[in-house]
Amino acid sequence: MKKDVLRMGDARLLRRAEEVHSFDTPELHALLADMRATMQALEGVGLAAPQIGVNQRVVIFGVLHNPRYPDAEPVPETVLLNPVITPLSSDTEEDWEGCLSLPGLRGLVPRFKTIRYQGCDEYGALIDRTVSGFHARVVQHECDHLDGILYPMRIRDLRQFGFSEVLFPDSNVPEE
Image (cartoon, rainbow, N blue to C red; front, side, top):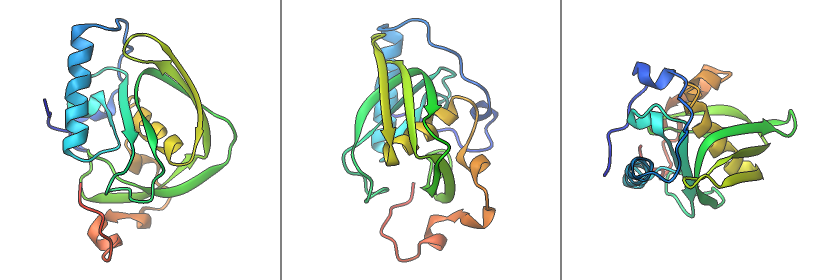
């Protein structure tokens, strides 16, 4: 069932989420169903459990085509629990990000270009991937939520942060 997404300013978005210890449970599957429904209803490319008020280290992400990110390459649909991210170099790149917890806003955010991420799926199977580009950006953004970090906290120049319709007046990108 679609859930309400917490918005920036809610203290629950600023805490470190707790590890998941039980896999393949009815409760976990229900949480994931709620997260998928919420992400799809809002045309998101990712969602972290804390964004719907659940303080667990659970993220989902994936996109084939998304009107909010029309130029993004596909990212496989993934359930990632207890993730660990390792940057594979110090190389970063800045790109525009939005967030379902900050509707209507965009910011230019630096992220590592290439990362390795590890964790488990909902059944406890290990996930170990090396990715770059948009895929790496999405994973870093969603996993930041698990540590109480929202993307504006990473923006280097707040002149590159604002409302989508003001920053991109000729864009066809829908609002969050």
